[in-house]
Structures are given as C-alpha cells and as structure tokens.
Image (cartoon, rainbow, N blue to C red; front, side, top):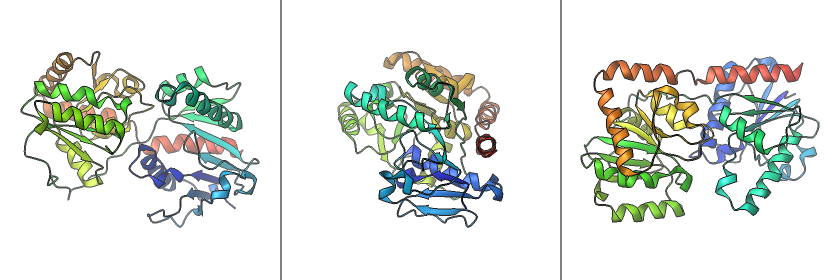
Length: 350
C-alpha cells in the first residue's frame, strides 16, 4: 500500500521551473525517504527517466482529473503545485505546495478571479499548505482564507551538479558575457536588459529559455533595433551541459524579474560562485539576501552603475568572494528541504 503519493505530473514540461522542481523532488525524496513511508509518484505518460524501484509509479489517467474518488487512495497525497492537474482522493490527507500567486498580476481581472476561486477550493481541501518562500506565504495569506490551517514555509532545494565534460557552446563567441535564464514572459522584465547592454559594448548578453512566446517576439524586435544587437544572443532552451557551462563562465547573472515565488536560477548561479544582480520585487530580496546586488530603478544608466560597481568590487578579491557566494547559496539544499517535508509527512501519518 502506498502511504505517500507525490504528484509529479508537471514533469511533462521538463524545461519549466515546475518540471525541474518535480523531477528533482522525486529524485531527492528517494535519497532520504524511509521505506516504511511506502512512497509512490503520480507521473505523466511518456515519463522519460528511470523510475526508482523503491517507489510505486502510477501513471496519471485522464479520468482522475474529473473523478477523484476513483484515484489511488494513499494516506497522504502531496501536490507539488497549487493548481494540480489531478485532485486527491477525498479520503486522503492533502498537502498543497504553493509556489506563487503571479496570476493576480499576469491575468485579466476576470481570469484572476477564476484562478483565485480554484486556489481557494484547493486550499480548502488541503490538510496542510506549504509555500516556497516567506514572500509567497505573505501573498497567499492576504488573498486566501486559511482559517486555522497550517501554512509552512519550506524553501526549494537547489543543486548544481558538476559537469566536467561540459564545453563552450558552439554558438557562443569568445567574449565576456552576462547570462540570464527563464521562460520568456513579460514579468521576467528581460526588456530592461537590452538598453543596459549599450553601456557594455565589449560584453555579450546571453538570454536562455523558451523564447517562442509573444514576449519573446517583442524582445527580438527590441534586439533588432538595438545599436548592439550583435552582442545579444537568444539561446533558446538549454541542455544541462550548456546551462552549467554558462553559469560557470558568465561574468555575472542578471535577473530583473518582477514576480518570483522563489528564484531557482538565482541560487543555481550562486552555487556556481557568480555575482547576481536582481530586482527588489517578489521573493528575490529574501532569496538573494545581503550577498546579491539590487536594481532600484530600471533606467539603463542606473542599472549600468549598479552592475559596474558590483563587478569592480568583486575584482578586488575574486576567489574569496566566489566562495562566500557558494557558501550562502548552499543553505538552499535538497537535504534540508526534504527533511522538512519528511517531518510534515510523519506528523500527518501519526
């Protein structure tokens, strides 16, 4: 019998942050999970990775979306996203993990109200709610009626696996470069980085992530009109070797996002020992702490001043500063994350 069933259905899009989070959650849970928990995973059709024999693997069926009482009935059902595609069996204890409420600003008022209604329903069903940052907890509690329900902050686990065989991407010229990475959505604020590059004509800007979006089209148009268009590279989706190499060799990681529940790429860049330059929006000040640099304005001249001053400070003691960054980022590790979830599972089982 499966006591714990974790919904990792979001692995159906591995290039998304949720896809990577779900994949890593399953892998890391199996490292630390006691066999007595009898774990299982609800996974999508076409799941392309080896499935740990220590768990039961249950392929998600379309009818589970509409008839929860016909779903598996574990003691605990854990959904890794606030809008799960498959709802838990009504007799299971339900943990809902909430990443953000970005729909409040991204969607029209009518659509936001619809999403809010669904989120409230999911929260009402939940035995416990976990959130990935204190910022998300604050926004969640402001908009969702929780009553006496427990809302627990458990930061994401992050790892950056060494890839010693990773080589420089063939499409990248040999010049110093800045790096940023995300799906291309307007909230990511990539457009603020285009005029910034006018102040760094000797550097490249590599923007990684799926850019086949309406916002990606607008970025392409901005690049065409830029005086330094040849220095801005839209890399598209990156494989793990490419991503690792770019983290390790960039001059700095730039992330001006306006809406983040956590900020996974920021910690990945820090684990590579890189300076990060962030907006002060969303969870980023909480995640970046005192080790990051922040833009208070998205005026190109102001952004350039912050970036240049930060780079000059690092040049004084580059090795020492890199180790400080890595040490800071190491607190966001999977072992700590999973142990907090195991404590929660144990409390609900008892």
